Image (cartoon, rainbow over all chains, first blue to last red; front, side, top):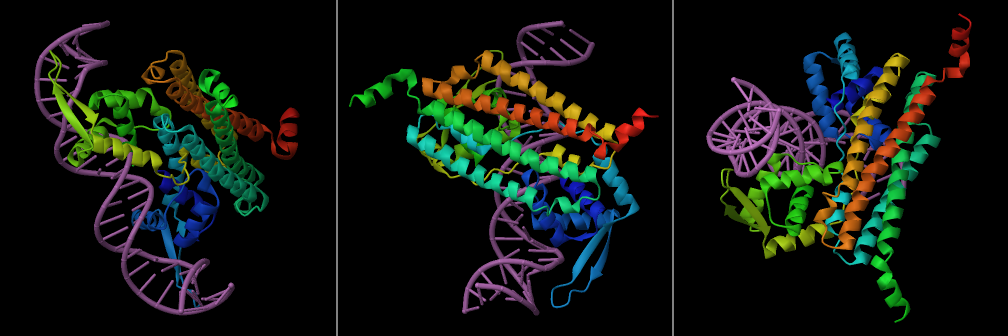
Length: 191
Length: 191
DNA sequence: GTATACATGTAAACGGTTACATGATTCT
DNA sequence: AGAATCATGTAACCGTTTACATGTATAC
């Protein structure tokens, strides 16, 4: 139901085409939800069939025609209903950690390299979110100070998550580089 | 490929039945990966068909027979290959944040209540992870100090994540309870 | 010439969840 | 008497991803 909710939510801000919706996803909620183009079109068709949205076809000069969707009264109801739904506890899926725990017996350097590479990815993500806060492309969607605050908090959640990941990676690398029981380090120093 | 990798990984620690595998998932990697019983059985059959695992049927006295799976040579190869696979950047799916950003115009109390309820869930999760660190049911799987360190770091990742969530929730609640521009608070004081 | 942006979509495959089925034993 | 644990599995469904298809306009 989350995809549906997100689409209804975006349409409640302003009428939008499927293509533009994809850009909204990538540009704003990407740090906690993603959707592909085909998913969006499919859901839009379903919502239309249910009468939650209505379409206006706008001829594009030169460009292809756009189908701009907006909420119907029933769609606004569906949004309110979704916003009221209680959520079951979050389930994280973190493939790197999975690899990590089973890679314990790999050469230390290999493990360290994996963590380093992952850290790079997280850093890149972090820079991306930071950029979003500065250029307020997302925040400009906000129609009230409160909405603005909420969107900002959401991006900051992404930043906080990146920082937590980076902190953990740093801890892990440091700890795994310390030779167990101090033996290896000693051996190395005296070689 | 993560489910497959995890199963191969567990089997590399010791031969295990499908049922017991489910318990391993729930008891150890649950904070970053989950699998259902049917998923596990399905994958086990697939791995068997590919020759990555072999089965021994152990008659259970009173209890149903168990089918204990172990890695073949080819299975060990598959595990090594999976461990070597580079991962594409992590995609988070966080339904609460999605609701959160579109719930901006709901009554402040409603938003606050949502955050509070979520915090409770995170706290419960945190207590669970803490318990796991203390009773070392998971850590006992470890066959070397290094493996032990890695598993411990993985659980600590879960703890760190919980703490990051809690910190964010606290920030969000505080910030959203401050009346915008200080007007509302003033009005209330003088009513 | 090649790639990217614009804009719509379909089809197939993959991965995960839910519901159902069986049947003995042990705990409350 | 009813529920939980042990232990296996199947079938249907749902949501997500990937690949394919079409066609114009603009930028490098």
